Amino acid sequence: MIKKIQNILPVIILLLSLFIASTNFLPVLEYDGEAMFSGFIAVFGGEGRVFGSFGPTYIIPFSYYNFIAFFLPSILSILVFIMVINEKKTSVYKMVLGVLLSITFTLSIILIFQVPVNTSYSTVILGQTVTGNYANYQLAIGGIISYVLAIIGSVLSLLYTILQFEV
Image 1 (cartoon, rainbow, N blue to C red):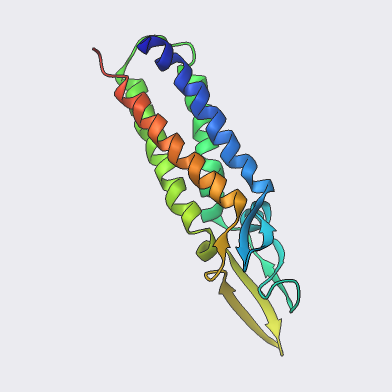
Image 2: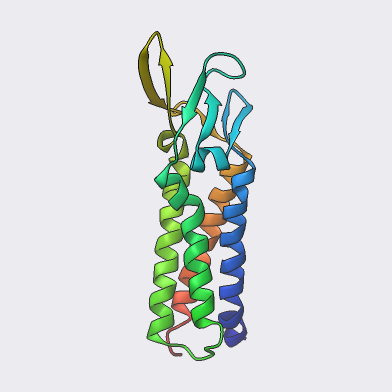
């Protein structure tokens, strides 16, 4: 039974990480219950508004932290999946990869929680460039789903690490 769990956990972890990346297409930030923009804009940049559906347009630049939050678990999970899929025995090598996955998902949890602060904007008002962030915004449905999936991914990665010890 434990061997089956050991063999299926990398697949489940990979799927969770891909679901985290796919939440980019859902709204990740909201203000007063109104979804403001998707995770794709929060990560790769675009145009947004600070004061709801009215007010000046703000330019949102690419965010490295948001990219790490949404895509690093997927990238590392794909690499780990490719490396361990054919190995059936437990090993220190697989344990170290499990620890790296757990750290990556934990980092993702922290950075997803900080998406409003890590998403910055700039605009020009009366000839002056004004910059800021979306700190008073809350996570929308995409951010909440990715947050929960990252917690589950971190726990499953830790379980995968523990299962690599010889019993």
